[in-house]
Length: 138
Length: 281
Image 1 (cartoon, rainbow over the protein chains, first blue to last red):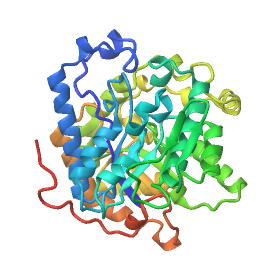
Image 2: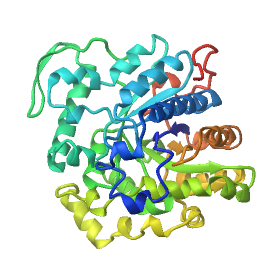
Image 3: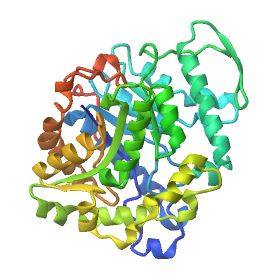
């Protein structure tokens, strides 16, 4: 059995009347009314610290994921998060589960290398074969 | 949802793009020679990846799905791990995952539990009552606010393949319950969230998720909605100390190989992240 820690990196402080006042948490939530960049920067730090805590606590893997224009899932680019986790867990047995590199939605080949998950495995060092790829929500 | 409504790619095109990108990625990872790719969506004159993955023949691949029958077929045909990123627990997923395992059987593949991944929301405390006290409001925040969107966003034209559309019309389980009408105890009772003491959580995970759905690659969501940082660490710590060790041995007695986990880590005991590798902000 392999057990991995997943994280959505949600907005943790939506207003109490959010669901009455706004149409949707996804696609149309108005950033300027609901979020503040420095606070969201704190969400990034908390999220990475929580996943690294899980990595140290003995989970087999840590998972990133991908959402766009979404207040409950703040990771538009999982490869960036995965790269941080790969570096910080180098030398351990923790796998990185990369959910949703955005290759199918890129239209120009120039964007392609960024979306290939193999870059994570390679960045992680010679003894640590821990990248895994899963593609977007179908 | 975002690919369609934000990027303007229609669902049917997205499915085709996904499949082409999947084929291109798998080929690029494995090809020994430079090749040209002249696809419908991607045209590349010289595919010659630098750098290459460490894992051979390629990194393990998981394909997430949410019940489309064509994705079951795709996952089984390509021998990948099908993973259901569910927010509504194992009870609601049972008939869907049974559908996946039926496709696995029909296509002559073994019922290796590592062919399946599943995401479960989990909160752990010293007792069931403590769990309610600590986590109820964060669980309700998640279902009432984080999952707030108009239902039509889930079904843009072409989102479901035809067979899935027919199945959904015949048995509309996914749209049957409005989570905004439910409270913490309902979410726990229905298994959307597995919450309680370490023993409660362990038993429910084993029975409902691991054995109930035949899952070898379990993912747990331990930071839920508005849950603050320190409480998240508490939840993770308790899960890691009291629940995880009791689940790790599941399936060991059946001898399955997790082909969907990096080969070098399949039998690995957890090894601590080296000191200095990480730093708290």
